[in-house]
Length: 109
Image (cartoon, rainbow, N blue to C red; front, side, top):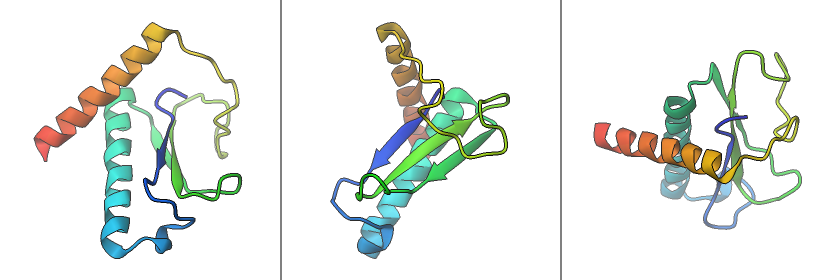
């Protein structure tokens, strides 16, 4: 899915409640900041947040933009479903879009 990202906690913890209050607030603020940037860059109809950790017991969040007509309407999306590798130019363009949206968000703050 265009914009699919994983936000990984810099410090090793298994769960959000293993962080102190200030560090937890920073993690969730970073998560929302990244999601807003993805929303601005890719205009999904919905943003899903998945805090799983079944395979990797380290705090991380999958940010999954959802689009009309995606392969799993009304169900959780498997990010590996229909995987397509981007060309170097496509990847650079997406990264540039996300960076521009993050800069725009910082300027508005």
